[in-house]
Image (cartoon, rainbow, N blue to C red; front, side, top):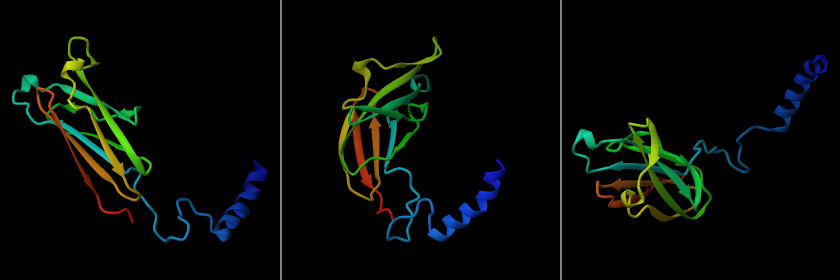
Length: 153
């Protein structure tokens, strides 16, 4: 421990002089502070009765691999998910899970009641963020809307 205390100032001075800094890009004065380039939002647009407005979330699959899940909220409220993906063509697939009040746990919604379609293909160019919004109706009919943010700079 005594050696570490003695060497620490020397190491810090060396790192400062050599120009080592975390997050610095080669040949650039700009640092990308965003940690995601995919923003996904889902909600149901046809809930009209509070008794039909269940708590739910969506499992998110990217290129057929489970990536995570959205926030939990009522079906009529927006649920969010962010991810960092490579520049490429991607497939996003969703799986709806709802709260079973009797069991007090979330269960996968029956396949016939899952959003249809439950997938969306998109191209993600370099230095862009895509916003994908999934609008569902009570009967499962789903529409995906995709928009790009400005270039990351």
